[in-house]
Image (tube, rainbow, N blue to C red; front, side, top):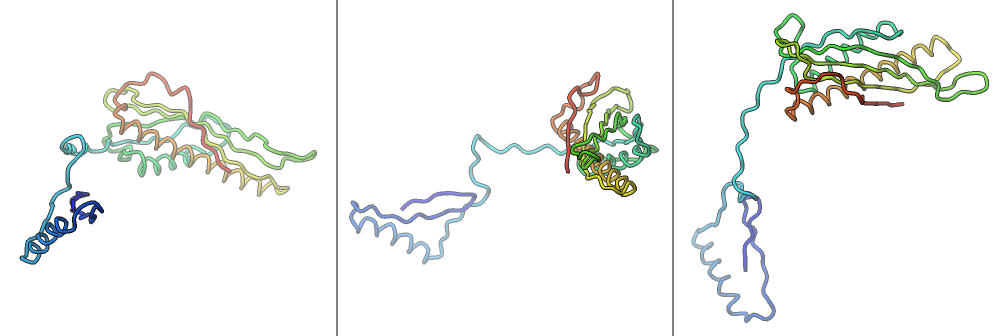
Length: 222
């Protein structure tokens, strides 16, 4: 008869070896029944033993940095993208970057700025007379600076893409193209927020960065 401890509980394991006499095995069982009948209970409290020593108490989490997201500068030939892409960044960074997004009028620790570098619409498939499928490709570069020192602490270039079908209706094609551009912008914002969170959690955010990352993220969907 033996006992095994798991997660702060005691699990009793039953088993009698075939080579052992029956009487020695019944004696411990009778003792256990006697103890339980007299009102005694075995109880293990706490989380149980920890492998590698005692658990380390986590230090209180520091408050999230206050981040201002400024309106992107549109360097592409596609008009009116800067407002939508900036809103995508503010939404994704407020929910998934580990930073607290504040208005430009409030005090902040960090400032995010950037540019929409290019927008492309390459053809994916076509017939002898018309285009059947295209892709919206957008490249965005952002950087984060310390408000007090103006030092660049994080920079990244991201590329997002989304595919769309081309129809004989030119007006409807524009609607499909706009939706693909919006989808690409959402992919970029989500990717940048995730990368910023990883940088923040790894403690690398405090290290200065001289230039944007040379290899940008590429996110795409159809």
